[in-house]
Length: 217
Image (cartoon, rainbow, N blue to C red; front, side, top):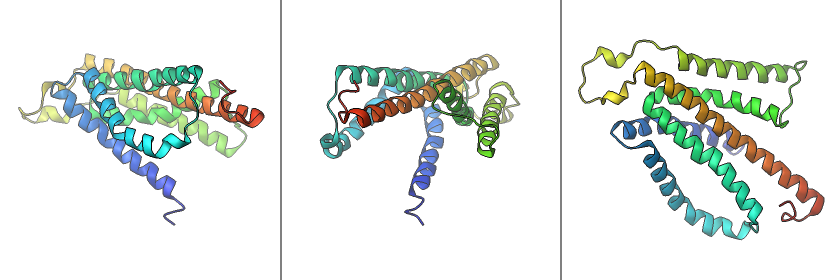
């Protein structure tokens, strides 16, 4: 049973890790860490941690890298990692960790819309699964918009705790700025996902026709 559902279990584990990331990031940024510096250190440590695995486990499986392929990797990384992460941490600096985690519910909805625009997804409203896609996307987006524009009283304001930094309770102006920035970050992340799928489909299609992965580039 565990082997059968290992992909689902891995996905749940990844989501648990993602849930902790906004909390740790908010604490670090609230203590005065610059969001752009935080992104640099995060990516630098990730590169150092993953480089040995990539070198010893994947180097023998890698394909030759052409200039066009490197350019595509650069552009996709610029959109999905550099731009998305920098916007994300700027948004965390102006909002709360709970808001950052909640607005990720908009990612499936935005990805679905972008996949439709790139013709990577089809919708058949006459089928139940087609209606489920549309309804699920609408619910996810509405939930994110509620968190973005409906602001209630902060529980932190009811307690006197001098150890909580002032930036932990963002002002209304900062909340609006953070909400817009967070939605922009999620959109860049969704575009990153769609571009990867589109690129992988192109590679697969050309390899099937030519039997040479280099010719696609």
